[in-house]
Image (cartoon, rainbow over all chains, first blue to last red):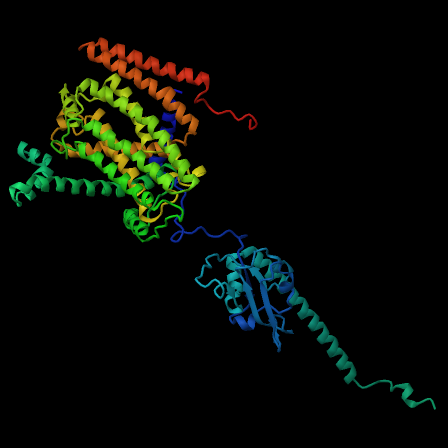
Amino acid sequence: MLGEGILRGMAETARNFAGSYVSKERLTTVEYPEQRIPTVENARVFPFLVYDGPDWQAGMRCVACQICEKECPPKCIYIDKSADKKPDYVGKPQFYPAKFDIDISVCMSCQICVEVCPFEAIKMDTQFELATDDRFGGLLLDREQLAKSNEYYHSIHPTEASEVDERLAEEKAKTEAKAKAAAEAAAAKAAAAAAPKPNPPAPAAGGD
Amino acid sequence: MVTSSTVENLDQVFIILRDWITHFFPPAWRQAIGVLLSVVAIVCVFPGLFALTTVFERKGLGRIQNRLGPNRVGPFGFFQPVADGIKSLTKEDIIPASADGVLHFLAPVMLVVAVFMGFAVLPMGRNMVLVNMDAGLLFFFAMGASTELSVFMAGWSSRNKYSLLGAMRAVAQMISYEIVLLLSSVSVVMITGSLSLPKIVDAQNQYSHGLPHWYIFTPWGLAAFVMYAIAATAETNRSPFDLPEGESELVAGYHTEYSGFKFALFFLGEYLAMFSISGLGTTLFLGGWSAPLAVLSFVPSWIWFFGKVMISIFVFIWMRGTLPRLRQDQLMNFAWKFVLPFTLLDLLVTAMWRFMGEGWQRWVVSTVILAGAYVLMGRVSMYRQHFALRKYRYAE
C-alpha cells in the first residue's frame, strides 16, 4: 500500500503507449475496409449455387431435386422445378430450378443443404458484406445472385473444390465408360442383329 | 536576437490585444469591454482545449491499449470532435415523462456555468487574471462546491434509480474529497499568507541558483501536491474514482437520462472541471505561469501555464488508462482513513516548516515525518486489510 503497484502499472502503460508507435507486433489492428485479412479456407457464411462453364443458366449443377429445401432446418430455401429439362454435366437431361431463392435473413449457416446435396450443386460462400437497406427483398437472394462459377468456388475453398472436381470427373468417366460399354453392347447387339442368321429359328417351321 | 521588449510584448500579447481593441471604445466603456473580451476568450479557449483533449484522450487511451484510436474523421482523426459536436446537436433531446423538467434542464447549465466561474480567478499568465480577487482561492472552492448541487439536481430530477444512485455516490465522493482538496491548499496559504492566486504565483516565481521556488519542491509541498492530485481526480470523477458513472453497475450515473446536447454539456463540464482543477494545482504547487528554470524565463508565461495544465491532463489520461475503478467502500476508506489524516499531518508539518526558519534542519525533519507517516500508514492499512488485495475464497 505504498503506491509502488500504481507506479509499476503506469510504467507498463507508458511502455505500451510508446511501444505502439515503434513496434508493429504491438499494434495488431487491421483497418478493416481498407485492409482485409484473407478469409480462412473453412470459413462459411451463406450457401451459393455452383455452375460450370461460362453460362450460369446452362452450367447450373442444381437439378431441383428439392432435398435441400426439405432438409433445411429453418426452411429458408424456396425451389420451383422447371417444366422442361436441360442436359447436366454428363449430358443427361435433368430438371433445373426455375426459381431458387434463399432468404439469408432466415438462414442459420448450418451447411446441412451442402451436406445433403447429391449433385455438389450448393456450397458455402465466404462473402459476408451483405448489408442492404431493404430488409425483405434485399435479403432474399434469387438464383441469379446465388449462382457463382466453379472458378470462384476454387478461389474460396481450393481443397474442397478440387476434391469435388475429382469426384465429378470420376463419375463422369464412369458414366462415359458405362455409356461406352452400353454403346458397345448395343453396337454388338445391333451388329449381332444385323448379321445374317446362321440358323433360321426352328420353331418358325411350326409344330403342326 | 530577441530583444527584451519583444519578449515583453510576446508575454503580454493578449493584454496588448485587449487594450488595443478597447481603445476604440469611449473611456467609460473600456473596462466593461475589456472584461467582456476576457470572458469571451475564456469561453472560447477552454472548450477548444476540451475538443482537442477528447481526441488526444481517445488516441492516447487507444495507444495505451495497443489500439489506433479514432483516425477516420479528417487527418489522423483530429476532426472527430466536430463530428461528435454535430452528432450531439442533431440528436433528439429526450426528457423522461416523469422527470422534473425545469431541474432537468437547469442541471447541465448550472454545472457548466459554475465550472466556468472558477476560471475567473486563475492567473493564466503574467497579468492575465480576469478578476484579481483577494480571496480568489475561496471563490474557486465555492464555485467548485456548487458543481455538487448540479450533479445532484441532475440525478434527482431524472427520476431514475441509476441517476439517483450515481448522484448520491457523486455527492458522497465529492464532499469527502473536497475536504482533502481544501486542506491540502491550506498548507500553501499558510506559507504564502494570502488567498490571492496571483500572489501565490508571485511567491513561487523566484529562483535561487536558477532553480525555481515551487512548492512541489519542498517536502510538505510534495505531500500536499500528491494529496491534492488524488483529491482532484476524485473531485472531477475521473478514473480510478469514476464510480458515479460506473457503467458496469449504473449505466452512466447521474447523466443516464441525458441525451443530445445536454449530455455534451455534462461532458464539457467534466473536462472543464479537469482544466480548472489542474490550473489551480499548477498555480498552487507548480509555480503557475513561472518558468521551470530561470534561463527559460523568456518564454511567454501563458505558454508555461497552459503547458503545465496540459501535462496534468496527460497524467489524468494516463492514470485513466492504467488504473481499475475502486469499490465504493475502498473509495471512502481511502478518503477518510488515509488521505485526510495524511493531509492533516501535512498541515502540522507545514506549520513546523514555517516556524523552523531557514536551514537544512527543517528539510530533514519534515521529510522524515512525512515519509515515516506514509510508510507507517500504508503498512498499517495493509495489515488491517482496509485496502488490501481482495481475497476470493472460492476462486483459488
